[in-house]
Image (cartoon, rainbow, N blue to C red; front, side, top):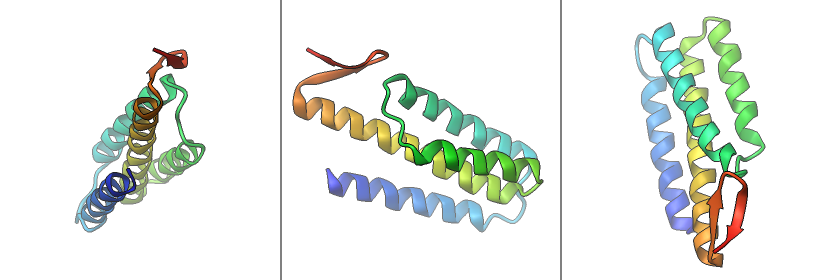
Length: 110
């Protein structure tokens, strides 16, 4: 499990590095990244598995977007999306390990 999480985190870091070096990041890019992060957070939140740091990073992305710092907004939004996806993956892995399932009501016994 740790290897999977480390691989996903490494891929996320490389993705964020790619956005950080992009020459021109527009408001549209920032809005798309924020929307993707919000979708991932909603999916994870629906199964009650959202990590506490994820909304904080998302709010930082929104603040950067409002300030016109679109490159920073994209990086932070991608980070929030990655955190949400990792949290969901952790929830699935733990549910599988303990023989339960994730539902919109949280964890339920099979």
